[in-house]
Amino acid sequence: MTRFDRRRFLTITAAAMALPSAAAASTVARWTGRALGGPVSMQLTGLSDAEAQPIFAAVEAELVRLEAIFSLYQDNSELVRLNRDGQLSAPSAELLSVLSLCNALHSASDGAFDPSIQPLWRAIAMTKGDDDISAAKQSVGWARVRFDTKNVHLPKAGALTLNGIAQGAITDAVVDLLKRHGLQNVLVDMGEIAAVGNGPNGPWGIGVVFPDGTLVHRLTAHDRAIATSVPDAMTIGAGSGHILTPSGTRARVKIASVSAPRAVLADGLSTTLCLVPKEQSLDVLKAFNGARLEYFERA
Image (cartoon, rainbow, N blue to C red; front, side):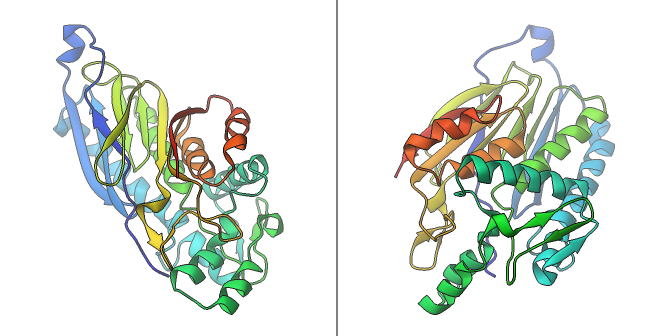
C-alpha cells in the first residue's frame, strides 16, 4: 500500500475577541510532534512549558497507544491485524466506538461513507488493471462487516481504512486526557482541531485553508472541533482524488469543512460530505446533533 502524509487543511489564526487583560497575559505551553502521518501540536493555556512537560509526556504515550489501534502502517496494530486476518478478537473500546459511528455515517449517507473501500482504494492507487479493480469492488461492502465486543469480522478479501474518521477519534482521546489532568483551555491539532475553553486572547481562532495555503474561511471556536477534507489534495491512480465512493467514483467537492461537539464526528462528516449528492448534504448533517457546515465548495 502507498503511504502518504496526512495533509493539513486547518490553521490557527488570531482570535477575533479578547478576554480581559489578566487572561490575555496567561502563559501558553506549546508542544509539537509527529503522529498519524503528519505534524501534530497542542497549546495549553495557563501552564508554563516546564509545568506542562509531564502532561506532554502523557499525551505522547497516548498517541503511541492509539496508533497501535488505528494505524494502517504499524505491523501489529489492531487495524492491520484485522485487515491481515479478516477478523479481530477482543477489539478495543476505541475501535468499537469508531466502527459504531461508521455504521451511523454509512446509514445517513445511503452507503456513500464506507470504510470497507480499502481494497478498491489500494487497487486504484497501485494502478491495477480493470479486472483487479472489478475484483476489489466485490470485497467492498460495509453491510457485511460484523462487529461486537468479542470480535470484528470482515467479508472475504475485505479490508478497512479508517483514515476518514480515526484522526478525529485520536484528537478526542487527547482532549479527554487533558481534561482528566484538569485542563479546560486547550487547543489540540491532530490534523483536525479541537478547541476547548479559550486561548490566551479569547476564543480560539481557526482558519480553513487549501493545500496551497490559501485561507478561505475563518471561525472562532469554544468547546468545538473542526475537520476539513480536500479530496484532490492527493491523487491516486490516474489522477483520481483519494476520497472515493464504494463504486470508485471520485468525490464531488473541492473542500468540505464541518464543526461538531466531537472531532471524530466532524472528521467523519467532512469525509462523508465529499461523497454524497448536494441535495443530501444537509440531511446528513441534520442526522447528527450539533454538527454544522463551516465551509463547502463543490468541484
